[in-house]
Length: 525
Image (cartoon, rainbow, N blue to C red; front, side, top):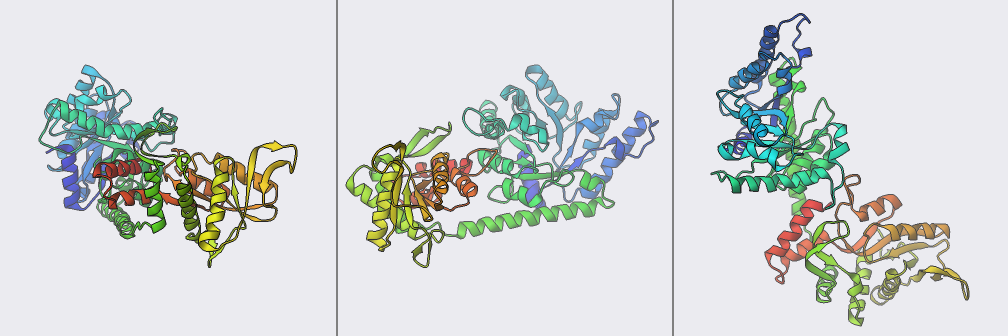
């Protein structure tokens, strides 16, 4: 049985996600400074054995940290670690926390030392540093270890300093830790191809700190549903259990181990503390599963104007499916170019779609009355869009609004200036554009309007891609505009409606839906 199969099976049988850490800090052994290596090692063994005996009915796995045993003494420290591992009841996986990272014969030697049941420690799994690449991971999950062993690779650890490297942006977009999360699947597949085994379980999991829920969420999206995540940091390090579970659990409410060491070892009753922790984790995971089921139960119904918009956008070639490299470096399965709305019929339908979306919004309309006086179209694409919206609001809803736009260059004759159309001084203004990529045009328009004492009250766009901008600010560009300017942003459609349309439409096969779903899972908000 593979390591992760053991983890999954035991988690299900115990209804637990608790991993118990075995960290015999010298400070916790209550020994005098003059204690001998023999005394330290015996105390460390008793310390760990007490925890094991108290928690074996609730622990999915045990995680001894090799460093604390090595610190006991060069002669007997590793022997004590072996003795502790041997004392763990059969059937309970042992994850040796060693964070190894080397290549070639050195990595193979480390694997032998960690795994061998006779001359080594006899662990079932290990923690590894992936920064030296596949070469440093391969010896732990291939060859004679293909069927029974596994590893958690460091992805985004719980210490603040992890941002120094793991949060760095990559050329492909996203952070380094997101790249590592994606490699967990890639390397597991590579291991399976090089050393086939009877198990279909992944051979690699991820270590992602519970202290950073946004990173947990991003790692889960990048890694997918099948990869197990070890999430240290709950308890002594201040990680929020509910937030961590919401971010890191897979759709089945599983796929994550919560390791706890000091919270149990320092308790006067380790058994009771383990039960309390297990129940607390289960309470958090049940809330997550319940909330996700509720969300799935909520209909992602597509309004008729949204369906019409998607279909004529596809007919006009404005919306396309395929493989498109975006400015961000991400490869998107769809592309939207509003500039291709270039016929009279398409523009007519486009205006009606905007008007329908605006009038359906309780953020822009109250009791059938718009909360704006003027529609403003920022140069250049916004000019025609604003005019279309004004005309469609009147033709379809008998709503009379004014229209204004700006020039890129100030005019020094005639009426002069850069603003054209209705006066916006003291008026409530709705800004209309096609999409929000970075939000620069909307922010410039907002500042321009405030300078003339106009009041921007909202933004209407055609498509909201609904995907995160970056790790540092894991909001979409649309959400960032709404947050920074404190105004609502309304779209005709967003990525969830596009995904739902593909589920219902006979025009496209399942492969298109799969690509869009995976893209949303990885980058969506």
